[in-house]
Image 1 (cartoon, rainbow over the protein chains, first blue to last red):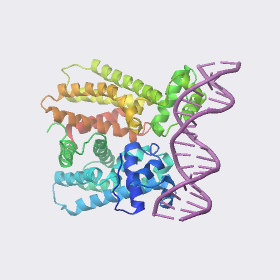
Image 2: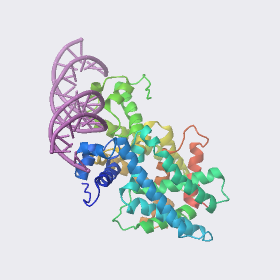
Image 3: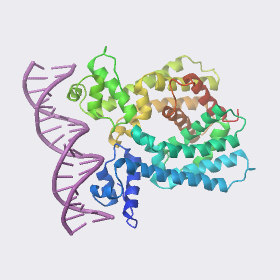
Image 4: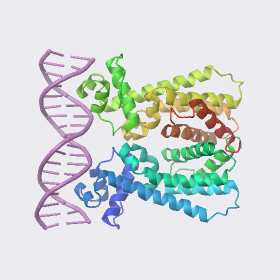
Length: 195
Length: 195
DNA sequence: GTCTATAACATGATAGAC
DNA sequence: GTCTATCATGTTATAGAC
């Protein structure tokens, strides 16, 4: 059951409820009535804040990207260009995973709900996603300059695959912490299984 | 647009159409009318073959698991226990990816549509999924005996993450072949990025 | 095995009162 | 900013004819 804290503006409550429900049930599987109920209002009232279900979904994913970009930026500031590869990569992997798992449902929505939306809705979010992926492409170019452009792109997709797939099994309250997960993924990515 | 070849029994045509549509649009995003239309019949006629949308979905995923298990079995037969790790792992990764990308939409549904279904529907497919994962757990135990049980489980999740996430970007008609993808993923998994 | 017709209900969205 | 009431449509599922 989704419960939204009451000390927020109406629009924000709707966004929070929508983000969580989109994560849990996907785009088509979530109804405006469910969102309204979780936000403590009636379905019709949603249209005071958003013009359509599509726009609400896009707004959720937009907010999610902002958080991801911010997390990336922050971990950049904490690093020095002279830092070793493993330290730099770990910082960014940890930032990504922290954003996904510890910064509310908005970022998780990007990983779990994006692909559940219809093509035309998805297409409206792609430019924002590209912005984030571009940061990682730049990072990879800096950290792994010897790889070919195509190989670099492939490796980045591998890393994203591991990180984002973890949203489907990682347990926030389990024995493995986000930090440990970040360390394990970074180590696996850099050194493989034969450490 | 989904087009189903006509030389098949009615039930099979429904299954084929459903599998493809579930992959493209998810569980909630796919309607029985769309499935019926793609299969060349009317929506009501589906109920001659399946009792509910749930059962149809479960049947699709069941068929998918059969193909995956069969692919795993086949790649086992082609291997010798004395073969080196990289050769054995590559064979199984290739078998998995071939099943997902080259054996129709049933296997892809397992990767792309499973998480779009409601909890109670998903729960009915979990035992079959577990069967397949168990094969991989056994394989990992044989190939990587020095790792701890928890670490092995984690690494397997990483590998599954990479393989299954590729369903979201891999282009069957692109420059990269399934075999090349399998080689790249296996190499990345075993040796990391610093090859 | 497929059809038509329809039941029973859910959905996104709108209009106007408060 | 939220409500109630409602529209128009879409949804799964059923019943009975062919």
